[in-house]
Image (cartoon, rainbow over all chains, first blue to last red; front, side, top):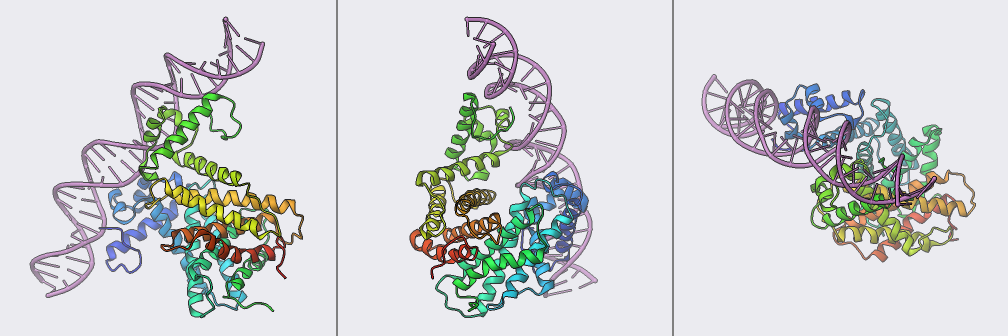
Length: 200
Length: 200
DNA sequence: TGATATAGACGACGGTCGTCGTTTTTCCGA
DNA sequence: TCGGAAAAACGACGACCGTCGTCTATATCA
């Protein structure tokens, strides 16, 4: 009855309930803004008792986190996105995935002043990208003058911030154009960290 | 009676009340975690009616935002921190300020799982650094192949993320050492954007 | 298949939230 | 200094929150 990670849950009752809750939130967010949705709304839409909600998530933010993080992971997995040092296209694929996911999320769902929504999105995106980078850096043994976690964190934040800035720009260029721009800005970081081949 | 920006408020009643509220929150956070503090607690400590609170801030998060943003701006102003292209020390000063502020904030106040506290801190720090960078970039007319806002956003996020990573590291190096590391990681971004002199 | 463990349903609770309308106090300019 | 304007105090309201204890339904394993 305690909040356990979504991954590796055997009991079909648990899987069913969490799927219902996530689905209900996703559906509701197509009509309402996140902070206009109460836990009651979610549990009613999911045909789940309100008390049961708290057996799975500490609050509605935790549910949203699971939904968002799951969605982004799914996108990355579907595209088989990886980071490999020396391959500029790898960085571009990551940035493009972030762009597309932001667009996708805001396509469904309302886009008004999402008070607590954006920080959650950011955290999920940063965490996912950070994981990709660390995995990629561990595969390629490199001259690690800097801690890999540090580089990965800073780079993932740089990507997330840049993508958000792009997305919030009124007349933004096509994603492909922007991806090239931001990659040009961030590749030098990876080169400086010794985990990307210098162009020369 | 509506929530107006803190800056440029003539009426002493308003200044007084907001100072009281911010002071009360600051005091309370030395004893309790932020999300353990209710609006009631704040208004009681500030000797202000609870309904009056909502005449000034939409919720306790807005109050914290004002407190944090004000504090960081104060620190930057006290140190006269600026960004000037071609001066690596300028970048270092910004990073160091962020480090010191994070340490300062967590020195007072409890440091447990600050649910909604951290995103707020992040946003305040990112916004302040972003402003510094944009101001510095506008002073130095540079070859702007990229939009200054884009570069400033991505860089400020990279700094904020890096500093947070440093701060959350159990056995972190001294701030000065870390500042040099992160500057070395981020300066290439500014060089790539053409707003810092290339070392060669 | 049957026994045990565990998830979910259900109702109720005290507490906080955000808002409203009214009354009292304070500021500021004529 | 006085009168209007605006801020703060105050009490009350409905809604939502998070939690608890009890009872029923379902899954798991021997």
